[in-house]
Image 1 (spheres, rainbow, N blue to C red):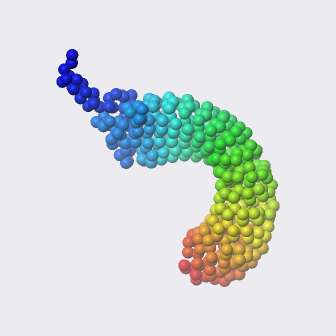
Image 2 (spheres, one colour):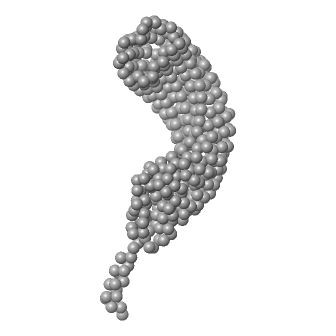
Image 3 (tube, rainbow, N blue to C red):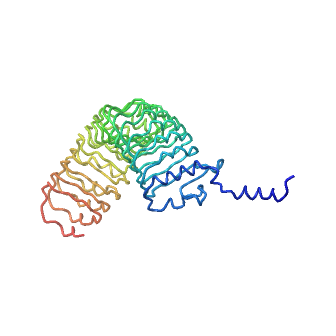
Length: 431
């Protein structure tokens, strides 16, 4: 029979043994990650040494069920420089890795596909290069994938379509080539899809219309062609719909304001859309940003703009709209309006003082360049004391420059060239 002293000695040894020695795989992998980082300005890795339990290392979280296994790495905005070691694939219990806003470069290791428990991956705002590893599709539990603003190239791998649990896919601001994979339409749990400014071309796949849970869609700043698949306009959950700065054409469905009732942002600017601006948008009462500029929309200035009481940004410039400048009178109802761009559309007539002076007190940006307006600049413009940008360039304005412009103390940009103004520059400009 063992003596009490032997039993006591066993318990002392059991509780005093360092816990980190029970998992050499995670320790070795973490130290390999550290070795691949050559600049750590905030000293985030100072605690990464063998004298401290690795579960207490800065940026490391270990599990509750498996207290000696790493489940999360978080080095958000630490200014680190270096590469990501392939040893990352040995952290088999890892569920979350966040390296946002650092300067990691080189490829994303293929070994990332070994992390079968991974749910959250955030590498945005770094300098990762090369292609997206195809075997990332083996991370079947992935819910969030963010690779925005890196130097990734090649095609967007169709294998991403196997990530059936994915809810957020952010790939914007990279240098991909090729088309949007049709397989993205298989991600029926997807809520956020961001593929803006990343070098994609070809048509928008009709399969995207299967993303019935989508709330955020951003495809702007590419070289997409063709028309928008009609089914995308029937995903009633969408609140952000951005396809600006492409080569898309066709008309916008007349029912858009009813089929997309949750719209907060509609970005269609800088394409080749034609036809009239759908009157049903008057039903989109949540709309805050509406960008229609640089298209071939025709017809009159919509009076129903005034029903969009939450509107903050309105871009209608450089379209084929024709009307009298008094048609903007309904915009005085938009008391949250901050940006109003009506440049290069045919809005003839004199600018009514009663309208211009009653625009939103929050207005910061007003562009009426090349609109064919004439008459005097209304003194009421001085009431817009929040203006930082005022462009009245190349119209038929005449008479003196109103002294009230001198009250625009926040003004940073003023252009009135190409008019028929008379008199001296007012002394109030000294303000």
